[in-house]
Image 1 (cartoon, rainbow, N blue to C red):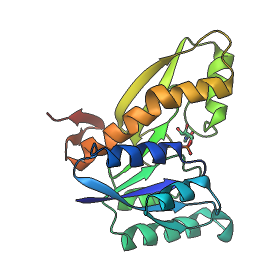
Image 2 (image 1 turned 180 degrees about the vertical axis):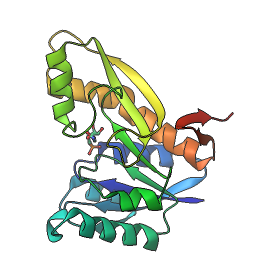
Image 3 (image 1 turned 30 degrees about the horizontal axis):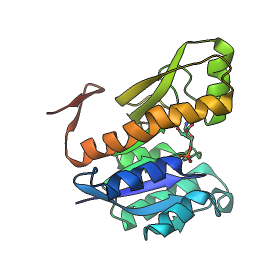
Length: 208
Ligand code: GAR
């Protein structure tokens, strides 16, 4: 069984999708063993506690810089014997020392179809605001491996979602979560835990 560590900063609906999927038996070969939050009081911590999942708070505000914070996260991941690290609405930038220690073992869910609407400054509601400003007709979500390039790692799964008349950033965010993020994140985690993901030359291949 692989140890899945989930990193969160906020509401934790993606964490909830992972927990629900785990409870349905849909995550084969792994289990969530710890949830780490960068913010004390994040609702995601309550979601984990309700399901008897260990929680830890490593508050960003307690560290003076990114390197010190990244070292603290790295020691926690090592202590928890992480096999897979999932960024589920984790809104803190980590130094590359963390990704280098867990190559192709960290994944992130991003609320757009990468390479559109991604990179520095594109997070949370901001992404959906930009999508609506641009007037694209399709958006969606992407799960990708984390590398030192922000939102630039190998793409694991993507799902498209249509923009509708009258969408606000909030309405669109909810649709993207329901129709895409909450589906593809648990799927990607399960594929990883079943050893079905292979990365060759920066491309993810899914084995049968
Ligand atoms: C999700 O939409 C996630 O894709 C996004 O933040 C939200 C967190 O919601 N992440 C990013 O924008 C990262 N670049 P949640 O806490 O309810 O899962």
